[in-house]
Length: 352
Image (tube, rainbow, N blue to C red; front, top):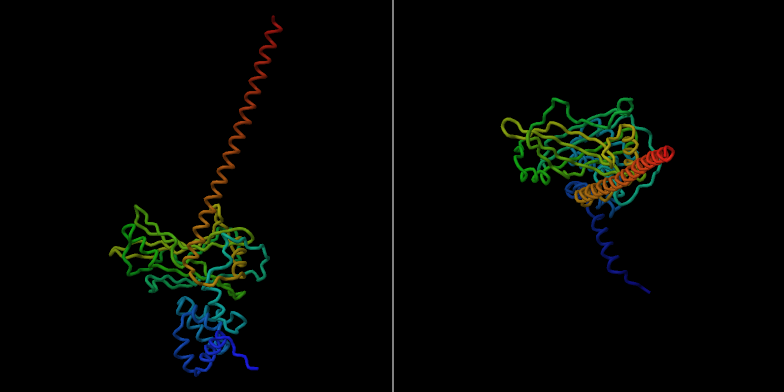
């Protein structure tokens, strides 16, 4: 007896057949090349032919990585990216690691204290891209060695620009609160840390700034991008600061771009402790990449609430200890007065 398949099955079959039946040259040259990385990743999950790791697919994902992050187009970074995922489709693996935020959400789920599985990295490569209204204003890579005693014992800090290096832009320097607020929507930043030894990467930026501050005296503007990470129950914040000043003609200049890591008490972590966290985050899972800007802002807001609760709890504990110390000192003082008064009475009774 013939059974008619469900309508949903027919629709899925027709959709799959439609994609698979397209000529390869049309599919590769006129359709896939028009997709961004997130859309292409979703499409490859629905078709075996699209997920095949052919030469064209490799080049397609490589082009997407370079267009999304121009800093990855350099010879050395491109070569490292091509070796991701055992050379099967390195650029696709790199995109899946670098586009979404790390998961799980550390302010609501405590990550397990699993041991690091990868080898210690001898260096980190930073691939940084800053955009203003979708136009690049800074694209740069920076290599940081991670094995020296100075790096391991000093506070973790990566400076993208040299002390006297200045990046000129065509952006008007903000002069008030309204123009500073506009930068929160107009400026975007991507900071990808790449481990060339273990072929791993992670994007540690919130994509858009979580805060913009203008110094009332110097007029310098500081944009703050963050990433909230969690390892083994500990929650830390990776902070990226972009400091801009005004030129003589009133245009904004990028003078400083730095990354630092601090714990929930505001203490800066050294290179050794930071590398332990970064290694485990790179090994961990990633989110879906959907609404990553709002997700990053939500994580930052919850992190600030956690810091506030921790400060209040610490203040209550300190207040309780102060009260107990005061009560102890007062009891000692009262006891001392009692002893003195008792000795005074005993002395007078003997004289009488």
